[in-house]
Amino acid sequence: MSESGKTAANGQELYFEIHGEGPPLVLVMGIGYDSSLWTLHQVPALAGRFKVIVFDNRDAGRSSRSSSEYTIGDMADDLAGLLDGLEIPRAHVVGLSMGGMIGQEFALRHADRLDRLVLSGAGAAPARSVFDPIRTWSWIKTHDDSGEVFAAEQFTWLFSPGFLRDQEAVRQTIAFLSSNPNPVASAAYGRQARAYVQHDALDRLGAIRAPTLVVVGEEDRLTPPWTAREVAEAIPGARLEIIRGPGSSHVLPLERPDEFNRLVTAFLSARPAAQPRSATAHSTAGVTPM
Image 1: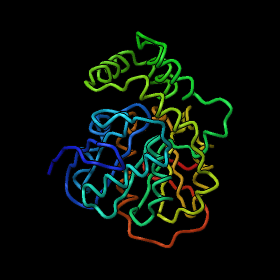
Image 2 (image 1 turned 90 degrees about the vertical axis):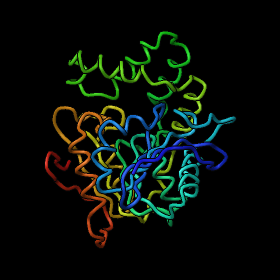
Image 3 (image 1 turned 90 degrees about the horizontal axis):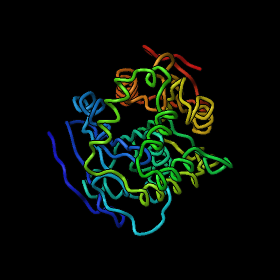
């Protein structure tokens, strides 16, 4: 099954795609990118087990541009509106980076709509930092007409050292991103960035009751393992998984898709079990605990 379109959601028009059959699973992208990144590795791997829904956040891709400032909580309400428009009462949610922040707020604001939650490379309190890389990215996005400095800044933070030394891989990735017919404009990026750096849910994460998996790469520079552990320890019963070795960057779904997809599939497919009160780290193939 494959379907695409737009639906009204919380005052926005959100572009979505649906692939496969099974329990509903929504994949939520990070800052500045659209759902096309999920279609490279996650949709083909997950659509055989789940009804996979990917969508473009407001101010990205084929979704509407916001007319005013907003918060991560507003974007979580967008997600709830998307489910309403698709007539899906509950779903699993997997969020990458800012998408994980949206997942946190969705779990807090719409607990009855959430089955299980996966947070990948997602901090919970960037607002507590005096300086955050995203603020720098937003300034560069506004002032870099060529886009070269912006790309260099992002790639340095998002990808692993090994990837950055693979010149052909970098060239192909830049070519793929540059071919997007719906690139995010600097004003829209700025609104997402301001929502990002104002996010602080850390003291509220204890109210999340959905079974939660927190995933992070050992080489993640943007949200390093200590940040992921902080999130996991704040969510009752959350599991922390640290993917180690080459390619264990912030963008695990791109650099380590096989391990990432296996973790997600196993976690979402597991039988319900009593959740412990504190975060625990586990090992699976290709993954080791901190």
